[in-house]
Amino acid sequence: MNAFVILADSFRADHLGCYGNEWIRAPNLDAFAADATVFENAYSENLPTLPNRQSLFTGRFGLPFRTWQALDMRYVLAEAMWDQGLRTCLITDTYHMHKPGMLYSRGFEEVHFIRGQEYDPMLGPTDTPVELERYYKDADDARRDFHRDGTITYLRNRAHWKSDEDHFVAQCVRETLAWLGRMEAKGIRDGMFLWLDSFDPHEPWDPMPPFDTLYGPLLPGGRQLANPIPRPVEGYLTEDECLHIQQQYAGLCTVVDKWLGVLLDALRERGYFENTLLIFTSDHGEPLGHGKMGHGIMRKCRPWPYEELARIPLLIRHPEFGHGKRVVAFAQPPDLTATILDFLRIDQMPGTHGSSLLPIVAGEADSIRDFAVTGFHDASWSLRTADHTLILWRPGLDVSQIPLHSVGAAPTSGPRAPELYFRQWDRYELHNVAADYPDDATRLAVQLQTFLDNLVWE
Image: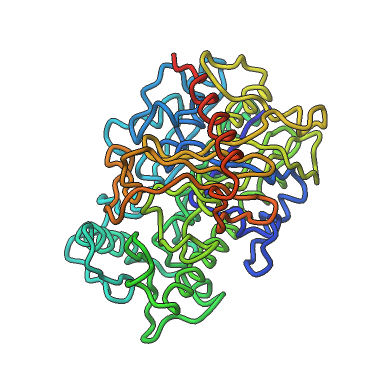
């Protein structure tokens, strides 16, 4: 047997048809969902990028314990695989995993880093001319120079692009198919663990034609605002610019779908659907503007674990059962770790917090947990049950600022009171009813605190 994980960074669940989206084209992932088990209530745990991967690679809830830091825990998933003789491979353009001392390639026999994503300084000569004004809008912001310089670096990295074949997700897929080809040439078709970690559709959002105008025209003058400063929308972006950015993000989602479709078609044609556990997921969603699109912010500039950021797509295809199934059970990243090890019949790692989802996929259980917990270490916590969402903020913290030791952001205004939402009619958490239902808020707060207090970190 094999286990292949496909992670697409910052892919909002509500941007897939299998989760109810009616305007974004993602036919390949939707077709895969129709042949897999769709988890309707999958939520990230410790946000954002690297803390999430710590959860995935260790099977642990890191929210009370871990920040944006190295993968320096004693037990990690790929090492457990390698120790059992599996051929392990990491293919990624997520350059944060590649930074010195971060250790996210531990346990992978082969590692292929695709360079040049986001602000990766590796590629592009410094004298390459770029059209900064076309892709970037300046603002009076504490980190304007950082994002301005990063945008220039990115534009130089991708100055040679001519079509969607040059996108980083396309490069990752081609590298994956090449690795599989090398394995097959050696007669190896099972006993493999692949982790394909695509940074797309993470910003910058600059899909190549025709995807750049698939959902709406470019801005006047051909502007393609690919890399807005992460900050509140008010006073920075016009309504048209905000809509344009949402359309560009959707276009990049469709690019990701196209190239993951290339990979999925190849896996199906080459027989891997018969002996492989296939998982598609993301690390988190993305705030993209007002209301349910982002509660008034653009990008992950605040430690706000609302629905648009916390919810993730999760599609699991077992080769034997669970095809075409939908479940409402809660699932979180540590559960994926347990699921993979369970499928490969490898003992769970010591100290893990997750539970295998295979009994749910097989129809042997309805759920493995009664709620989901998501937040930013040392800043915010949320609890979601079937009926409620509770969001708590660390007392005394300016919660408009993500602590620098977590990910970094610019401060704005002061602290916030607890927030309570009814999920059945307010899925996107827009109408806070904590003041009207204080007993419910208190009960859920105790439930959340009890869960966190009972977590043990060895």
